[in-house]
Amino acid sequence: MIIKRRSAFLIALASLCLVACSKSKHDLIAKRWKLKEMHSGSPEAEESDAYWPELAAEKLACMNYNFHPDGTVEILMDDKIKKNGTWSLNDSGTKLSLNISGSEPEDWTINELRSDVFAVIKKNKTRTIFIPK
Image (tube, rainbow, N blue to C red; front, side):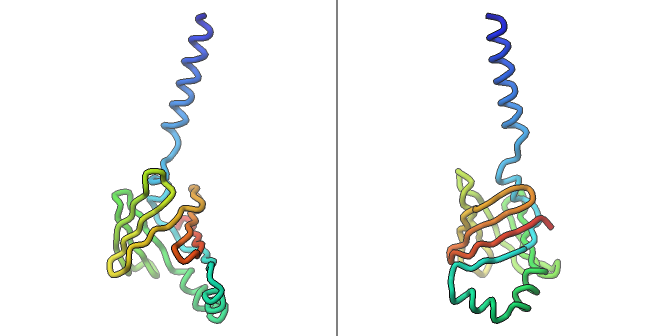
């Protein structure tokens, strides 16, 4: 009987530690991310990107999103703030709402999220991949 209680206690303690030690999706997103890749879901956009590959590569190389833990975000180009706004996650952590000043609000579907990669699907079906800066 004592062994069963100890086993149950150790299992409960291990479960609590796993939950407490893992980072939340909010914590994983809240840092500076460098834009790495964009894959369009639209054939017209794919043709446009193929027509201007130098421009697309140049834009990707210098664009960053700085997601702060307090729900604010900065979009930077060449390390200079270009736009400000706010961000939030839905309760299940599957959608990120982005409100950038001067732009329409956007909802991104989180496609992949780890400490080393953050990928989203935007409304226009574009898959956007970020890596830590």
